[in-house]
Image 1: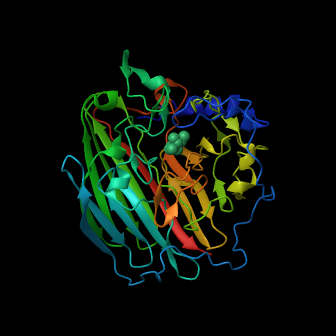
Image 2: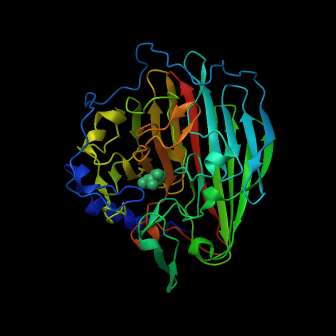
Image 3: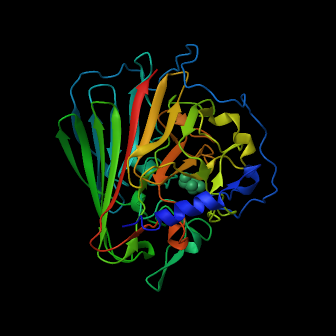
Length: 421
Ligand code: GLA
């Protein structure tokens, strides 16, 4: 259904791929709320660990102190626990679910924004820590944090100037990122209360969230009935599975905005990342793709071999906030996306997805405004790997389509698998 333009697109990628030199200059960054930064702005001071590929292997024992000073709960038994979390000013109740696979992986999710508020996993010494950015109360989540752990919809990432044309009709969306539409608009799926139902089946425990977005919400056509299921398995996988149907032709591109820090504290600059992508999308000053796919080869964007985030970040103006075009053999097939490794704690995360792209965002805009879990979240405190379609696809006919028609079902599966080494 949405893969019709894929063949054409692949041809385009093959033919037009430009080989970038000094790609950092092309990815200028606006601040979240202010006007754009000059393209000529000097790059930030270097904090540059060696620029060679890093083998994903354990470093000398450092043993990062876990921020949850408990041994992991290896009870061997799966469980799910529901408790009231708080109330919105409107009186609407928000619940919290804790799902535990009994093998060390424990995930907490609230119905506000279907938001993952913590992911606990042991390090190589069996000591557990929360490895995702989370806040401590519903009040904090109501202060519009930058999408920490939230479910994003209807459209993850940006739509230029908040408008697009579908079947001859122009739709105007809410704009919330300068002149652009970002992550679903002013009141996206991250700011609504989802219905939730927990389940437990052989080797898996989770919660299925659902939300019905009315026709016209944030400017989008069609009533969109969405679900997202967050579950964990006995194999230490966190699964995120999304679906959506519509009653009018529309666009859909759901994702989750978890911020990962496998050390559970500090920055992610020494964490080792690989991304299964030979190309990325250069963007304009407003972070809207220019339309071409550029090769990552010989640029600081290249994570085809494992590299620390900090090794070249100073060469990427503003830090990483880019959409990588994944090397996916078959569209919609669950394929390797990325790996993250924290040598100090030994934690390793593998990401697989059905989606064609992933946004690497290194929390460049965090500035200590938000705190939680005993920490102040500063710049580079965590990284996001948002599996999704390309930004601005509704306006870029060469990109794989995000159009969803009545009778079709949007489907997206992303898996995060945790281990230590
Ligand atoms: C996404 C965007 C970033 C930023 C964050 C939230 O990852 O690509 O530019 O807006 O969300 O702060």
